[in-house]
Each structure stands twice: as C-alpha cells, then as structure tokens.
Image (tube, rainbow, N blue to C red; front, top):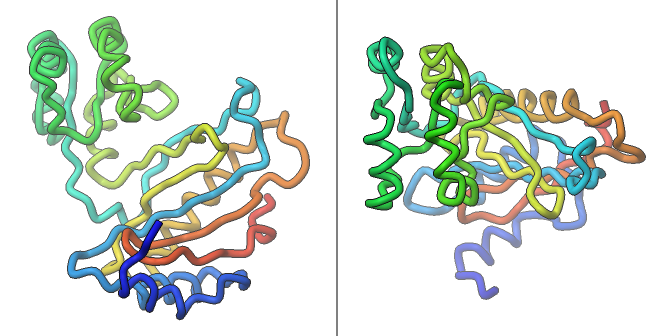
Length: 231
C-alpha cells in the first residue's frame, strides 16, 4: 500500500522498534495527526486467544469516561409504551415493523446503534444478514437487547462502545478524537484495556495481550508495551 507524503513524514517521527509508554504514545499520535479534520483515535489489541472456540470469545461493552466525540444516532425497535420512553431518552428513530421494513426494502442505514426489547428480537432477527456483517446486530451482552431501553439509549449517546474479536483475534476500538488531548484519550484507553483484561476467558492460556497499538485515522500506529496489561 502506497502512502502519501504526509503519512511518510509522520511515520518518520515514530520509532517502529520501540514500545511507548501510554502517555508518550498519545502525545505521538496527536503530533502525527495531520489531516484537516478531527481524526478518530483507534486502539488495536491482539489477544492470545482463539476466537473460534466459544469459551475463548472476548466481547463486551463499556461507556468511555470521555465519550467517543461522535454524535451517535440511535434506532430503537420497540412497541407500545416503550416507544414514548425511547423518544424521551433521546432515540433518533423509533418504531417496529415500519423500521425493519425500511432497512430491508430500502437499504436504509442512517443509524450507528440499534437498541431493542427482548419481545422485538424476532423482528430484528430477520435483519441478521444485513446487520451482522456491519456489527450492528443488537446483543444482550452489549446491553442493546434490554427491557430498559432508556438506559441503553442514554449509554449509547454517552459514548458506549462495544469491543469484540475479529477473525484474527484482534479487537479494534475507537477511543475518541485527536482534539481530546493526551489525558482524556489515556483515560478512555485505560477504561477499555481494563475491561478487556477483566473479560479474559478462563480457557485462555499463555500471554493474554500479545500486542497493543494506537493510531489516528490517517496517521502511523504507535506500539504500547503489552506486558503492563497482563492482568
């Protein structure tokens, strides 16, 4: 992959062989973010597990103390009195069959999170092939299938993120924007890593956190020493 001049210049400022302390890492990420927009900062954590086995899955959700810096659009699929509760809690879109049909028939996807009640999971389940590949399927573990839709909506709006393994046993998560500054990014990072360490499966053997890196949308990645997170 060929990188532009800005990326190449930024990459020269990062020592690829070095493990950075977290505060140094975020300073470096901020310094090398040169795009004209407020870049998102992502964490990439490779785990010493095999996600193909059910007892080695790592998945969950947490609310970041400083949010993600993103305006999160929430769709709530529910019925009856829950609809009014969802609207009051700040859901951007509320409905049931009308919303699922809109997604199925029109390919409508103007939302970032779906919250639903257990009694509507049958409806949402039909959208598995559309929502699943995009990581949008509601899940009880992530707190997005719940009778308490108000709580789920407020948490999504406040910066709740879901973390899960990809096929290569790596977790990719946004933890904020470059404009947050080093301190707020580190607080969000510590919260996420703490949750991942706590979620370590009993079946996981050997080194749990194999590698950890942070990067901005357009910038080079900065490696963080994984040994300090072996909870």
